[in-house]
Length: 312
Image (cartoon, rainbow, N blue to C red; front, top):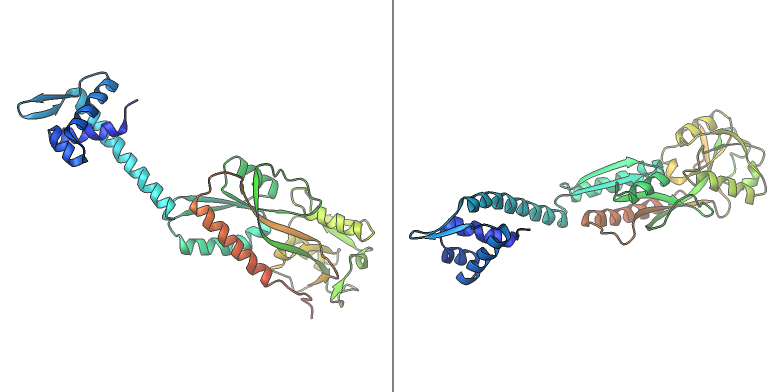
């Protein structure tokens, strides 16, 4: 293996034509330059320079190695410059994945601020439900995954994962405008025991678990009318009078005019929204800056939380 520092010495000797001039350029002694060239010749297994009346000149092997040395040293300089840029948030690539409701609310605001502060950092966001997002994080395909957990939801593999809490995301009841309980500011789940319910269609997100456990704690098993993971579609079904639903606060950024949103009387079911990274892994300056922004934006969403009745 050729020593890069010795390649630099050879390049200077070839360019300046003498050991003494190369020594001055490198701030070495002439003896140190001579020793570095001798060691490089041993590594290369051939003579690299010849001394003559007009100074030192490279051999054919030396000239060939100088060409490669120049390319190698240029690439190293580029690498050092890129690393400096990444450390200074003037370059690099940050990859985020997010489940849908956070991807439509928290992520856009955080990304907009990040790009305003660090426009040279390339940033991508791709959709992924929590299990897929964590799998991509573990596979090295993402730097930060926006995910969520809830009491009693155990479907996520959190081994080796570090979670940063961003906000609590409480659930609200979505009713058709003509519902018998639409006039109440706060409801109990037991008020809706006879209604039909809309439920998520997969176990990939804890919302389904949250609804089932909350209804069971209220003393009834919900009668499921339809399954959908699209909260805007669920609002449409509710508006059509086909049933009621629990919806997280983040999913209610846009609310239809023909549905009613009501809060629950006490201790509403709640999701915990988190930013996941690999525990103990290197965290780039870009990732650290994004995590700070996500915490900031999460606090803002909690601060503007509806006290609800969104009712008339």
